[in-house]
Length: 196
Image (cartoon, rainbow, N blue to C red; front, side, top):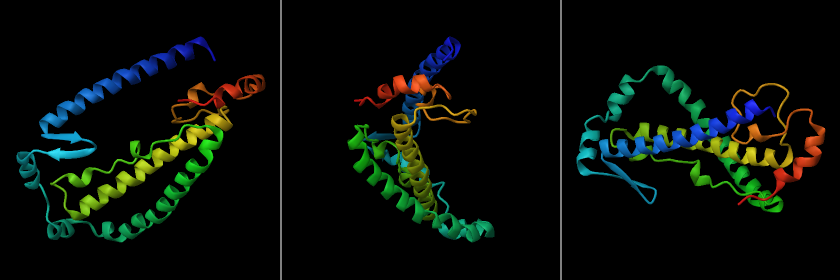
């Protein structure tokens, strides 16, 4: 890998750390502004904040009356995806539980990716809360799968592709160059070393 690319990767990591700190600071400000805290994973709103939120809640009658017909027609298709998602979740979990220990790959903490908390917002009606829970589950599950997949790829085939990857996972940049047989032979065991 060229030194310029290594330098850019180092800068990116530094910027990602800086961004993480800024996001944490912004989140603290948002929590103060909208009067909530997160205690042991649970969201707690102050009473005044809940009353303010409820003023923006759209009742179900109005929600359905104002919804477009296409929403009703596509909802069964959207929600039918829940079945393969649940099966995918089951298989991902089994895969990780059964295979990762064999290869000493550190397990992915599912709760770091599946964050379902929007149902606590008082300005959402029942349908909106269910929709938000569905999206939180689906997108969280796909992020969880990406992390499991990236750890698997790092172990078995840490080789970059010949073509540019549009949005690679976080481990990809450290992979071996496409066509580097010597690097693969000499460095594969480094990629497979157990990580804490």
